[in-house]
Image (cartoon, rainbow, N blue to C red):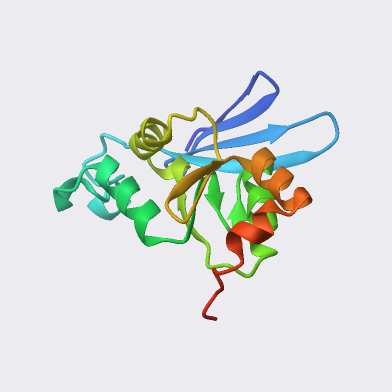
Length: 166
C-alpha cells in the first residue's frame, strides 16, 4: 500500500490509505479535525457494502421533498457539518451548543455526507452557508443568528413551547 503526503492551502492531506483519503486541517499550533473522503476503487474485489450510496435515490422522493418534510415534521431541524454529538465545524458546534441549552428536541442531517442534499437545502432556504436552523417550520438562520437570538432572549421565547420528551 502506498500513501502520499501533500500540503494544500494549510491542509495536510494523507492520500489513499486503506481505500480512504484522509484530510487533516492544521493551523500554526492546533489540530482542527479530520475528515474522511471515500473513494471508489475500480478493484473488482471491492464489496458493495463499501461503495457510497445515495440514501434517497431508490425511495422515489426528491431531496427537496426530503428537506420540506424534515422542516415540517421536526420542531427544531439543523442541517450541519457533522452531527450534534460530533460537529465538524466551529459554527455547527456553536449552533448545537446554543440549541441544546433549551432542552428542545434537535433533529439534524449531516450535509457532508451528501453534496446533493447540501444543494437542496440551499435551494430550499435561499441561504448559502451552514449550519441552517429551522424552528417550527421556518428558516431562522445560522449560528450567528441563533447566538444573537439566545443573547437577546428571542430564542427562549421561540422555543418555550417546544420541550424534549426525554
